[in-house]
Every structure is written in structure tokens, then in C-alpha cells.
Length: 227
Image 1: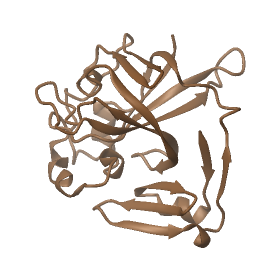
Image 2: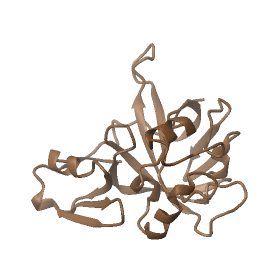
Image 3: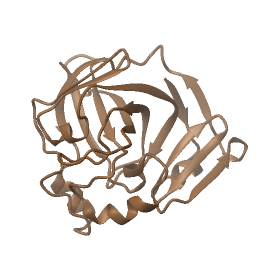
């Protein structure tokens, strides 16, 4: 896993958009589809290093710990201009996901099952990804390219394009009794919902760069603990 630190200038530029980072520089995706390229030579500071040796593995089975974004919180964050409704996932303590040998195996009871519809495959995307969720600080995640999901996020329709980018982030649990206990944050960044947030339907027409939901500021975020 490659971890990359950006300059303050680059971070500020991601405030209302999303960015991908590589040795060549930063590619910033603004809301509305505009893409800005910043060569590495123009950054104040960029450092890349291999954090694989120190990072715990995300492989294994995880159970739901907390649903960070709820229908109520998302509707409130959008000041009522976007309505997420009952089809948006609700917390269910029985939700589980297993990552093993390039396979994502869901065991879901909530409406998350309308996105992770069955066993899927994943591969790591090399570049770090930073974005600014609604009402949250800038977040940098590891991207997974997942094949076998329903980008419609709908119980009644299935997307033709079943490949999406999903973000994950291991976070040390500061409330744990012993150090070295991590929980897994999962970010559904790439969907074009047909069952909730209908106000985004016009946006999807112009959203050609994945991940779509990060660009619109509407990722679905939840955290999981090891089973």
C-alpha cells in the first residue's frame, strides 16, 4: 500500500472535489466534471513511501460497527435539497463483509445488499485517493477496483457497468483496551442511485469520471470491526 502526503496547496484544492495522486502529480476532479492536472514539479511538497510493512491487513471478515452516513444525516447535510429516503442503507448489526484472496464476499441484511449484490472480485488501485465528504474533513483512502457490484444501488434494477471504485481505510481504535486494534472504514464512492437521492439524476449524465459519488459529495460511509 502506497501512502502519499500532499502539500497544503493540493489539499486545499480538494475541498469541494476529489483527487487522485501519483508520482506524476495530482489530478483534481471538480464538481461538474472539470479535471485539473497539477504536475509533481509544481507541488510544494510531495512524499511517497511504502507503508506495507507497518500496515495491518484488511483481509478477513468484518462486522458492522457504525453507519457513519444515514438517510437523516445526508438529507440534513444537503439542507433538504437532496432527499435520501428509506432506500438508503440503515444500520444493521448483522451486516458482514469478507475480503480474502482478491474476493469480496458480502453477508448483508441492510440495503447495502443492493450495492454489494454477491461475491465480487477486487484489486488494489496503486494511487492514493483524497476527497472531502459532506460535513467531514479531507479523507485519504486506499481504492479497490471492485467488479461485481450494482452501481444503481437499487433492489429492482441492476447496472450494466458492474465495476466500481470502493475506498477503504484502516483506523486504529483509540477506545480499545490494548493498542493495535483497528477498525475498517468503507467508503462507497462510486454509484448512480436510482432508488434514492433522485436529485442527483441530472448530475449522473455529466459524471463520466469514476468515482461518481465522491465527486458529488455523497459517499456512503460505514465502519466495521473484525469478527
